[in-house]
Image 1 (cartoon, one colour):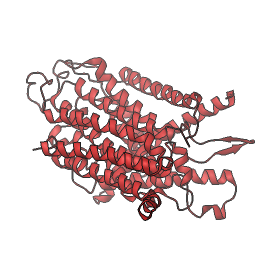
Image 2 (cartoon, each protein chain N blue to C red):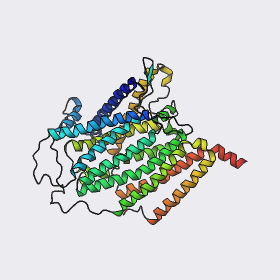
Image 3 (cartoon, rainbow over the protein chains, first blue to last red):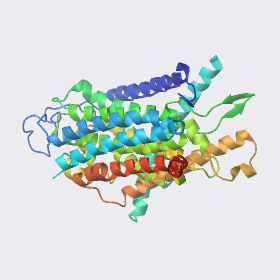
Image 4 (spheres, rainbow over the protein chains, first blue to last red):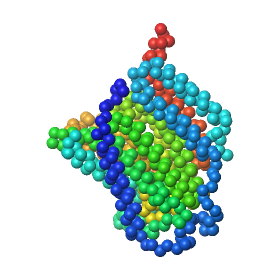
Length: 125
Length: 348
């Protein structure tokens, strides 16, 4: 790293503190409501809601492939975004060469992007 | 590293945590009052003067309600869902610099819980974990509406995360750091990032709306189609945690927007009149909270003004408009920063 501030593992300790506090809060909240509320269960009450009619089958149905495609594309693009972070931090030091290199990278990214657009992967009816 | 440091950090964590909860609680009140104001109604006015105790009444109600876990759901995951949501919402607040350092008895105490040099990376990491809470909660309910809501939510959040990431990269290029404390410190005086990165700021704000599932991007809990979306089956405080985490996310998003683009705790010209560093630091907190409240109001204003998107419109906006725009912003920023080098290259 060229300009970055040095961090020690100790700097991350407060994050752990926050985690403990937040976790404690959530656990206490969930425990308290479990104890406080009334408990009058009946078979009908414990059924899942389906606008008042009887539940038809299981909810774990196959759903549109589009959502899966979006997830795959997200992984692709997000990984490329992660690649750009170290480059962006050192952008001024890398100079013109770094800029041209990243333009090539972004160019490839855009070619792929154009391809998935033309393939209709992002077409929602 | 001394015991003092540890005690100070624990106190700071507790203060920030309670303020986060307080702001989130009163955001629910503010939302109802603002909705009432925009629709020419009165809004909640029974609990206390001007209904100011309404959030407390709501909280008590949430506690005393019956807790229902549907018998076909996955019990452990059903409880885990809102827990993760709340946990991740609280965890993002640690990297916000709430102010400059405060000097007590000769020692400088930074008003930031964790000043790490990868603050932005941490923020994005925790933000993407938030999807799991909604996804797990919606899937574990074993309800068709919940499942659809959860899938919509995760699909929407990951789509807008890409554009958000690219718009932030342009900001990282100009600031040259991933540390939130440094980004805030660089924006002293009039050097607000929104003036350097107007397009990036716009993209970031739009994505923040989508990430927090706020209207006009509230399709995951679109009550006209999906009953309640991913929290259809939830009741009592588990529902409360879901709703609460949304308001915490809104508060943190406002804080992040203010810190990244609108100067954070800085206010132009204030250095002329106030010279005491401690007073400046405290004023900085006040300014930051003024900006945050402004953004929270903006979030609510938009919610009660704009109609909801259709799902294909939402996806088209995310993938076909915001991502190309943010890449354009990235390239333009790079070209502008490299303009001297490029000129030299061509003139030679």
